[in-house]
Length: 373
Image 1 (cartoon, rainbow, N blue to C red):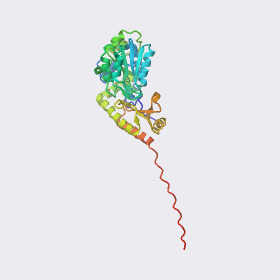
Image 2: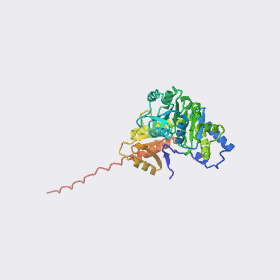
Image 3: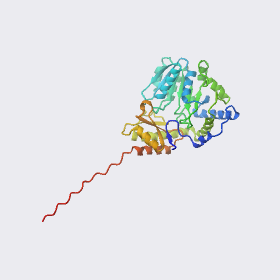
Image 4: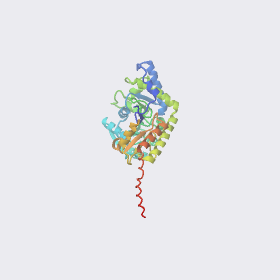
C-alpha cells in the first residue's frame, strides 16, 4: 500500500520531483553539476530571505546543528529549550566539549523574549541557539522577537533551527539578523531526506575564522569557498540536488508568500477541528502552521487510533518522547493541500465516532386475558 504521509518528516514528494531523482548520475566535478549547484543556491536565497552565504550539505539537519556549534561558539552558548529538539541542540554542544546552558520552559510553552533578555544580561554567552518550530510540541517560538533581543548584543550570534518551519512559515534571515539558519529538506521543503540547507552571516564566518576544531566536511569556511566555485567539499547526493533544483522552481512558481498562506489556512482548519474533537497541546497563539500537536484526553487509545488510520492508508505521528500516548501529531506541510487534510480529518472522525446506540428493547405485549362469560 502507498501511504499518504501526514507526519512531520519525511513528507510527501511530488511525482515529478521523485522522477527527477531517476535521472542518470553525473560527475559532481562537472560543469553541468556546478551549474546545478549555482542554481540551487540562487533558488534558496529567496526562500531564506537572504543575500548572504548559503550552502547545501549532504547530511541531516542535526549535523548542521553540530557544525553551528563548532563554527560559532567561542566561549559559551545559551540554548532555548521548549521541547526535544532544543534539548538535543544543548546536548550536542556539551558533546562537542563546549560550555552550554539551557533556558528551559515547560513543554507546550514558548520561549519568552524577556527571559532571554534576562539571561543575556549576565554577559556569559557569545551564541544563542533557538528552535523556531519545536516539532515535538507544535510550538512556534517567537523567533523575530527573540532575534531582536539578541541583536542588541553585537558579540552574540543567533543560531536558528528552522527544520520544520522553513518553506511553510515566514523566516526572514536578513531582516531578523539570523547568523545561522539551518533546515532539512524532508519537511516543508518536501524532498526525500538527505540534504540540509544553511545560511551563514558574515559575522558568523568571521567568528569561524578564529575558532579551532571546526571539523572538515562541515567547516563553514570550506563550505563557503567551495560554494563560490559551484562545488561541495565532498561527494554530494547528486540525485537529491536534481530534485532540489526542480522543487525550488516549483516553490518559486507557487510563490513563497502564497505557500505561507496555504500552510496558515491548513493550520487554522486543523486547529478548529482539533479543538472541537480533542484538545490542542501548544499554548494558544503559539501553534506552528506546519503541524498540529493534539492532546488526546478522551476515550480513544492513541496507539490504536494511529494504527486504524494507517490501515486506511494514511500515516499520522505519535507524540514525541514523554508525550507518546498522550498526544498525536498531524503535519500539514510541503505538498499537502486542504483537500488532503480535510480527507484525513474526516477519516479520523469516522474512526472515533461512537458506535450507534442499540435500539431500545421492547417488552413483549402481555397476552390478553381470557374473556369470561
